[in-house]
Structures are given as C-alpha cells and as structure tokens.
Image: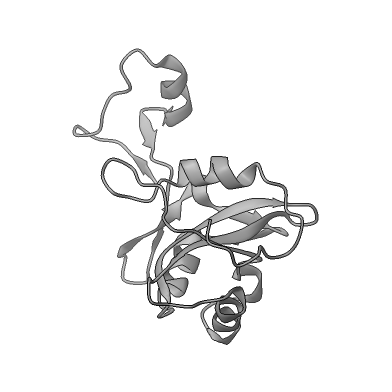
Length: 165
C-alpha cells in the first residue's frame, strides 16, 4: 500500500536512507499488502516483510496463523519463513500450546491436512513449541526477534522435535 496526503508524514527526521527506501515521488510505501474486493472494500493481507516465498509460491503468514489459531490446543501462534535447502524458505509455525493441552506435532500436521483453507504449500514444514512468544512494548508478537532466532538455524529436518523451548 502506498499513501500520500496532508496527514501522511513528509519523511523521517534526519534519516535520509530510510526516506529513500520508504518514499517514492511523494508516496509513502507502508510495507502493507492489501487487496480490493469486488465491492471496492480494502482488506489488509499481511506485511510485505513477513511474506514467505517457498518453492516459488507466496505464503501470507497471517492466513496460516489464523487457521492454526482455530486449533483448540493452540494459545498463540506466529508463522515465519526459515531457511530450506530446496525451497529456499519453508513455512515454520511457532506455537504456544494451551497450558492444559498435550499437543504434538502430528496433531498440528493432521489439523493442517484436514483444513480445506490451507493449501499444501502453505502448511508448516517445521513446527516448534515454545513456552512464550516475544512481544513488543504494545503487546504484539515481535516477529523481528523470531526471525533473528529461527532464520539463523538451518533446517536439518522437515519438522522439529515436540519439545517446549
């Protein structure tokens, strides 16, 4: 999404490099991916920075997160791309299970296979269970930290062990 107008910032104070990156002919490049429907309603899809390209296919993490959040044993979930030797990136789900839940990777995989809204290439190839997800000051999941933590780890198998990290 690109924005321009009287209420849009004219630029970042004393940050020329960021201004060159984020502005084009007076338009602010937000980094948000949006779509119009047939009635001209605008829908937020995801952040461009979060887009996962796996085997040449685009995967929007928010779409996968919304589906995984439907699983009764999932308290919180974040989806990121992590390195994969064949597909360049793989869809990786980082899940905080509900306290009372005894969930395994096989449960998540079966749920994904059965869900009609989740195409095969969008299914997580790596599932990690953690006790908590890093948060920003406003309480949102901090994907930047997750990407730093998990993108550095090269994939050694299609899925991780079911340990709580």
